[in-house]
Image 1 (cartoon, each protein chain N blue to C red):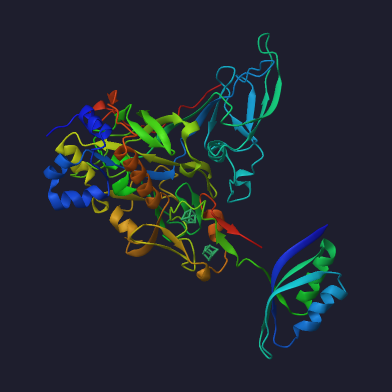
Image 2 (cartoon, rainbow over the protein chains, first blue to last red):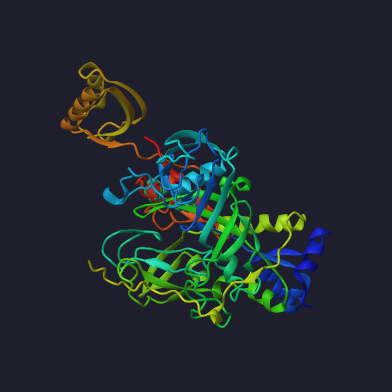
Length: 402
Length: 136
Ligand code: SF4
Ligand code: SF4
């Protein structure tokens, strides 16, 4: 039955491809059996919509008259610093960047109302952004100061390049201490007052392709409401972790680096985000099509929330101090029920990842493919699996002597 | 400098609110706009008003109210959700002390019941896209 991507694309062009979401495929396979489902279905779409801190934007704003060299100078976008260590007019804005005068956590917990992620959202929305630059001046780039409005429609390039997105599984954050803590897993109430999780579970891209048999470098994806590509494996990609019989990692594992043109994206799917007491970030919408090239690939997409497990981690002590060990494992079905049991205590759960929006993304992508607007790509190279020997290592600190 | 604030006044049963409120205008040169009042004789009275005037007079007026035994709260009842910004993540669901948020088990849509909100403001800063807005 093995299909090829070329064959699936042929069907997409003819408007005959059978496309279902990673949620719909569960019932279809239950009814018809995996092999029948694999024969009938061509593409399974996935989705996730979640804060993803390692996101950022490369900008080229076009040369001024006279010319100015940003490289080695300073650039601010709406008072948020951008990175200038590149050629004359290229800058990079990270999602977690903050204005120099943001009080941060000096007034605890810091509010982090506005940062790099918010500018990315505003640029995507077509809003004007104030750019201020200071340069040192050279013979070929004499100008030393620039203050101007920029707009995404006028600048040369706005390339979203997120170095780690779409994590394959994530931890459940809790707080064992006796005070409220403010983390990237949200506000965690004392003494196991709540438990927060952060993936779309059975809809999440890499949880539907646990061994990276379908998604690879070069896979075309839904990114921020537009089209993007998988550029590489994400930083901290860690394929060699404990997995269930279904292949699904039981802790954070793989990740993706993704790239795309911000000019064709939509602010609905790139939302500037403020984590109280933690910082600014960007909530990113990603949807990835999984071509049903084999029965095995389809079987992986039928994974349900009840079969995906996440470790429960104490963010008051174990996480900050890098202590090993967890407070047990819990399935996404339990997490989504609204309550879990930890140390015999009933703990209310909440998600930082929007399942509602993940469904919408999977459905939008499904619509694009059904209408023949979105063709699949053949990966140029696979993502590294456990056999690659890639692991993530903690830092070995070496004292610096004078 | 002029200020204008919406405040909630709780009158103890023993004092009548009419004369007190009039003194705000007469003695402190403040103007007020009563938005809501519920007074039952012999019971605690409640009034929601917008009080405005010069900052120094305003502070004096508030001090006067406190001295005569009126309890003052800022009006924090009005927490509304900016529907366009809500991503339906659900981060607010287990934070709200009054259970104003719930999740539709079918669609996973996060529902906000304005009537259950007690205006504590916890969700306002904790909502990651800052969709919960506090109005005074
Ligand atoms: S935390 Fe904010 S964005 Fe998330 S569901 Fe609640 S109101 Fe909506
Ligand atoms: S203000 Fe307080 S009571 Fe009202 S919805 Fe937010 S958390 Fe709940």
